[in-house]
Image (cartoon, rainbow, N blue to C red; front, top):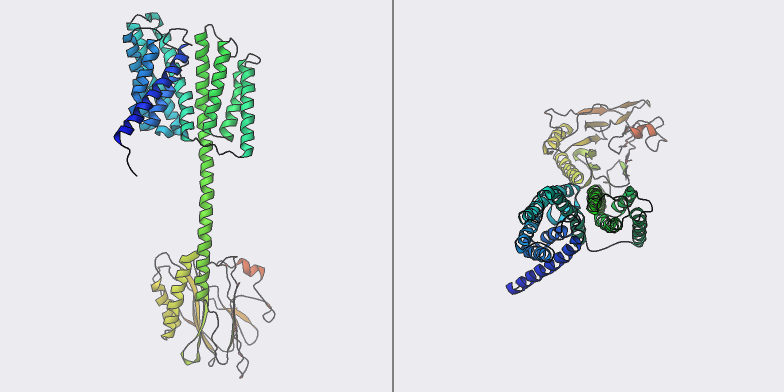
Length: 523
C-alpha cells in the first residue's frame, strides 16, 4: 500500500482539528445555555463525550481542537482570557487523561463492546478523569473571583456531574455508531425498531410531559433495546430519552422537578447516567452471547464440512482395506457381509480372510478404539502387519505379541486371529479383547471360547496366550438358541456389543466328507 504524502496527512489532521473545534464549540454553547448556578458550570455538558470519543477514534493528535473549542466557548460566555485559558486547559487535559485511561485499561474505542470494559470506562473516564476539568475549572473561576468560596462545592458538583453524564451518554453513542455504522436489519427488525422508537416517544412524552411522572416507565424500553437489538441501539434510546427528559424538565414537567432548575437537571443527569450504566453492560452481554452463538454456528458448519470430507476419506480408506472379494479356498466356501452398526463408517473395524501355507486359512476380526481417519490409519497398520506376520509363518501367539509391539502410545485395538486347518479339524487362535467365539459340538452343545486376553496397546508387559480347538466344530461370534435359522444377534446380544459390531463366522465338518461354510458379518 502506498503511503500518503506528508502534506496530505497534515491537511487531514488540520481539518480534523478544525471540525472538532467547531463541533465542540457548538455543543459547549448549547450546554452553557443551561448554566443556572454559574455562567461557566452546567449540569448538561455534551462536549466531554464528544472530545473523549474524538481522541479515542482519531488519536490524541487532534487535542488542539478540544482546546480551541473550549477557549472560544468560554471567551464568548463569561470570565476573562486567563479564566478561559484555565478552563480550556482543564477540558483538554480531561480528554487526554480519559483517553489514555480508556486506551490503557478499558479497550479503547471498543470499550462498549464488552461489559467489563464498560464498567472500567465509567470508572476511569466518567468518574476519575472528569475531576481534572471540574477541579481546574472551578479553581480558576474561584481565583478569578467568579465563584464565591461558599459556592465552590455546588459548582464543582454541577461541573463534575455534567461532564460525567456527557462522557457516559454522549461518548457511548458516538463510539458505538462510529464503530458499527452498518445497519443490517431484516424487515422484521426494522418494523420492531420503528415500534421501539414510537414507544420511546410516547412513553417519554407521558413521563416527562407531566401526564404520569414515573421515570421507571422508561426502564422496559431500555431493556427492550438491550435484549432485542444491542449496545448501539440502547445508547440511541438513552440519548433520545435524555433529550426529551431535559426538554420536559426545563418546561417544569416530569419526575425530576426540584427547588431550582439546576437541582432538577442534576437529578435528571444522575438518573440517565445510572440507566446507561445499568443497560449498556446488559446490551453488551446480550450482544456477546449473540456473537458467540453466531461463531458457534459458523464453527459447526465448518466442522460439518470437515466431517463430511473426513467421512469420505475414512470410507475410501476403510473400504480399500476390507477385502472386496474373498479368496477361493479349495474345499471351503467363504462368504462375507459388512454392515456398520452406525449410519456412518466408524473407521476402525475390519475383517480379513487369507490362505496360509499347508492348506490353512487365517481369519481376522478386529476393531480399533476411536473413530475417523486416525482409527482407520491404525486399522490399516494392524491389518497389514498381521497379514505380514501370518504369511511369515508365525503362530497366533507370536503374531499377537508382535502386533502389540507396533502399537504406539494412545492406540488400542481388540483383535481375534484364528488359524483354521480344515484337514486336521484344528483351530488355533488368540483373542485380544474381542467377544468370545462360540463352539458348536457335534452333539449340538454350545460353549464359549472365553480364553481372552487384554486388548492390544495396553502397555502391560505380559504375553498373549494361544489356544486350540480340535474336532468337529462350528465357530460363531455370538450366542444363539436356534443356530440353523438364526439370522442376527438377538436384542439382548445387541445391547452387549460395546464396539458397535459383532462377528459371526462358522465352519462345519460333517463326518468324512468335508462340507465347510464360512460366514462373516459385522452388524
